Each structure stands twice: as structure tokens, then as C-alpha cells.
Length: 125
Image (tube, rainbow, N blue to C red):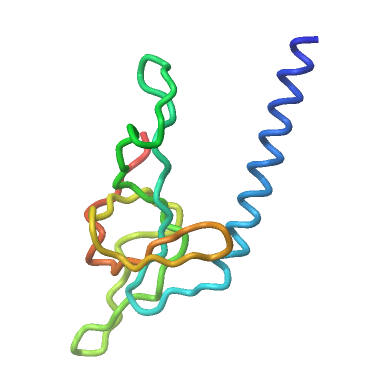
């Protein structure tokens, strides 16, 4: 019976995750970044401490990492040649603490940065 409840809970979480991914995909499909702009969504702070204690919103530290959701084509140099973007969709990037343009699509909040404003890319190990 416990196994059934755990399995049912996992299935429910998967359905909720799939629904939120679908809504997010529909929301940012409507927005296409121009030139060297990047659409990102900040990663959420952990709700638990290292010891497993649930943290209130006021105690959570702001995370300066985001997931790249969409990128523009890039910008051109003075000769007219296209300068490629340094990030790609799906990258986890480090963003500056301040700056960026906030945009709300659906119920989700996103940020728009220029390619040169991105501090770095975090490689998954």
C-alpha cells in the first residue's frame, strides 16, 4: 500500500511537471529574442537547508543562475559578419545580480539579457 502511494505521488508529480513544462513552452514560444539577446528563467532556490530544515522565503538566498530558454541569431560586427552567440538553449548560465529586462509570459517570470552580459556557463558534470 505504501509503495502504491509513493508510485501514485511520483506519477502526480510527473504530470504536474509535464503540465508546467508545456505551459512554459507555450509562453516563451510567443517571444523570440532579437539580435544578441537571450531569454532566461532564474533557477529556484532550495526550499531545504543542508540539514533538511525547511526554509522560509525570507531565509532563501537569491540564486544568480538561470536556464537559457531562447536565443537570438547574434549580432553583426562592423564588417557585417555575424558574431555567433556564446550560449545555446538549455545551458545553465551565471547572470549578473542586477540588470536584465524582466518579462512576464503567462504566470512565469523571465529575464532578457544581452549575450555579453552573461557572466559564464556552468557545465554539468
